[in-house]
Length: 379
Image (cartoon, rainbow, N blue to C red):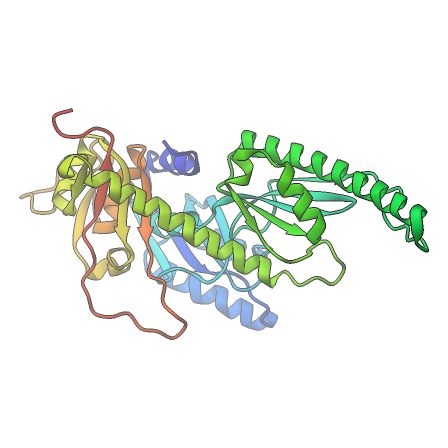
């Protein structure tokens, strides 16, 4: 079970019905527009069959906001009038808005946003010390932050010249090296303990150079250096944000490529392809990583459906003459596959399309689902 979705699997094992909301977060609109936006979510929920206590809880949660800068995205999961899951993400919503009520919650929208919440270590360094922050991309806060205040004696002393000037310069360089050695030691420790996907190093040019020379090999392999001094007053963090966004996209692409490579091993025996093969593998709890095309995820109610079950094997084909006992009804195919994957401890990845702003999708069909298996056929 991936730690990121352990909580979700526990919720999926509980009986419904459930109210699911994926919508835009609170913006910087006037109060009356915000109130109208909340009603635009709660009114359709009532029409979809959500009980009054669920609708009230959703309205209260949305009115309270998410504390994130605009644009942001909000996901709510509600049962018996209680918000049991409330997550917010920085950035535009991925996929269509979801306002649903039924015996099984809609989790695929959450999985798509959680995939981008990649953990990383940000090191903002200067000659006198550094700030180290453990972060998740697209989240609003650091899970942990540490300030390192190194020695500052002689750092800003400027001499007239000659031997005395060189002595002070050498002394200052020694202090900078000492400070960055301490920063490197703490960065290496955080990498060992928390295993971030990458390490962003920003700050003063000379401090970055000294730090990179002192980081351990494991940390250096993860470094993404950004030429911006974020600790300087009035600094612009746009370059830092862009670098993190690209690093997150690269990390997700790498994970998807790795899952596809593993699925192709042993002449394809280590993987499952297509809805039928993937269902068989899920029913045997053999799936390690499931890769879904974003087009299949976006098909929603307009695409194929599968039966969701309230116990193992969690998913069944729709061509059965009648639904098996314990059926929760039909779900869109991508949703049903993702649900069964999470319940059986598999990781779910969605291959999103990277389109330029304003660029429309072409009309190609969705790629078939692919699963890398825990063990291959015959082994």
